[in-house]
Image 1: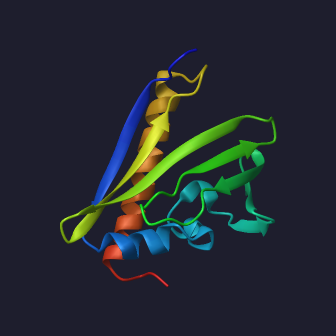
Image 2: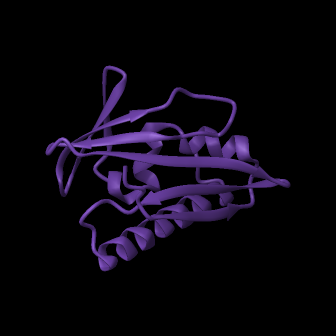
Length: 136
């Protein structure tokens, strides 16, 4: 079994972790901060459907929980399933949001760096929205 290279990308947010979790864990809010889902998510049973540059993707989220876990699996049309570990962790009066980016097989260094930069921008968007109170 191969272990993929990984990068933990994180963003500190000056807002209560439960508020950030409540906002970030709602699939309907994700297009507001997760640019890869900018086209929106549509419910489909227990899953959600997203349209993107790779076609239609099925997104399956873990159930709501008291631990700040927003893990989700994205399955694209080719059948590739990508597990995304996303956590909101208390940090004093605020929190830190952490995304575990796995380097997929056959991904170049440039693609991995671009993915990491993309995730960092998304987490910065989440910080900006939640710190400024621009949440529903």
